Length: 88
Image 1 (cartoon, rainbow, N blue to C red):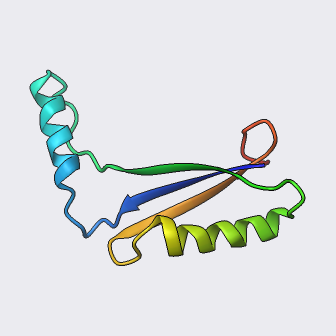
Image 2: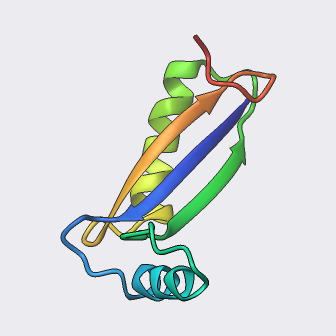
């Protein structure tokens, strides 16, 4: 099974890279873009023998302890089925 982890800066943390991207977009004529927040995306493949509940717990631990910095970042974990879609 596959999983996705999205890591983003907390809303209270300044995002200079996002501001630079917004400025670049605006200078290219995309003036409708008012703000950009950049982040990180991870795709992980998990052993299919593990239950979804255990996988989500393990992924939460991995995201919290390894993939993100809890002081300045938030994260979100998505577990996907074998087709790469979120289970319904």
